[in-house]
Image (cartoon, rainbow, N blue to C red; front, side, top):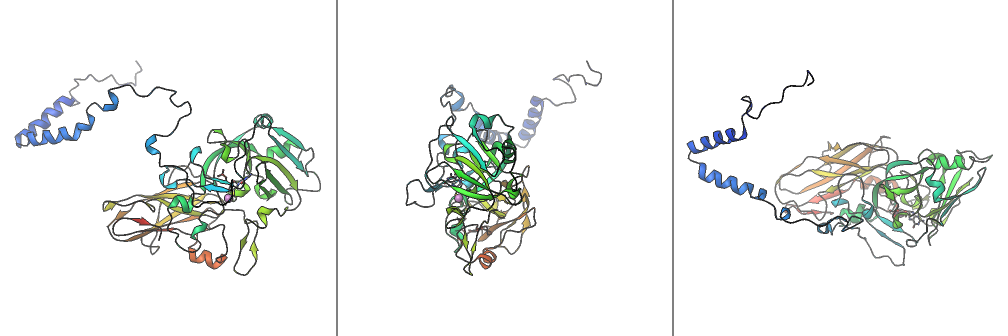
Length: 431
Ligand SMILES: Nc1nc2c(c(=O)[nH]1)N[C@H]1C(S)=C(S)[C@@H](COP(=O)(O)O)O[C@H]1N2
Ligand SMILES: [Mo]
């Protein structure tokens, strides 16, 4: 035996009261007070759930009942939903049930979907990624080629620039899934854009990264095409084939998509088939008629790529009801397309006073960050809000500040502070 290991203690060691001795002492004391009968009955009642559980009396379901696991059928209401009916086939979106999720990662089956032309069926063996334009040696990559290159896994949020657009004109009455659910966060795995550009010999003269743009094109019916400023994305853009550990889901771009951390959702081109280096933006449909914001002075804001800092309380949130007066934790999500979340403040009095929320776990660059704050609901009406500040010092604006800066014609990039009202009955509403 090692000299420093203490000798094992015998069960009858006098220094430790044995459980039975403790129980005898406790019962003795209770009997002395004449309370033994009622206490024993209460204790038995309390421990009833510890009787052999019905679920322990029979063997459970076998393994491989679901070769690919599925959530408990009792969680069947935790699903993606749509805020509106879409007029054209294929052009639709579905939203992540933020109020029912925990932590910061979105399970693959609940990642929001936004398609302009439906989900294509692509055979990965036939799929090719072309990298061409102003590069030294243009090349076609098979999926196999890409899987043999050094990979990187990083956690990033993805947010549609139309997310929360229904709040521009004031409270929409909708629950958080439908106001903020065009938002998800995954661990993405793939190849760095910079590695791929090295594979094609780098940029050809006279283009250098400070002047170059990258055209990304999808293989779907919408042929989603965006021009991206190379210098701003080169240190972090990834061409990914996996999300949360498994290959991309068909609806999220299988077999290949672009991830541009922090940039508006549509730049994260799914079903990626081509990256072309060019010397100026191509002014595609997605950057002229769509994804520009008309300002109050009649000019349009174009190439507003970064999703600005934003946060939202997911619990309690509209649809929830507080049932007892007392302690309610407030929790939610914060994120910024320009860096990390530095702090989140929470108010329970409509923004009159603010206090710091706690930030959970590791804080990743351009990723969802979970916050929590303690709150005692006294039973009166309350208005609960959260406000994020990011690593650049930018503070999430009020709706009035945002409208003053952008007017009311903008559909995109709504990131104002979101308020939920709690009325005296405990009902939480977006009002
Ligand atoms: N090829 C292609 N890429 C696309 C789209 C599309 O319709 N086609 N939709 C874009 C939009 S608007 C968003 S918000 C994100 C949505 O990604 P997700 O469906 O994986 O959540 O993908 C973008 N990439
Ligand atoms: Mo989007």
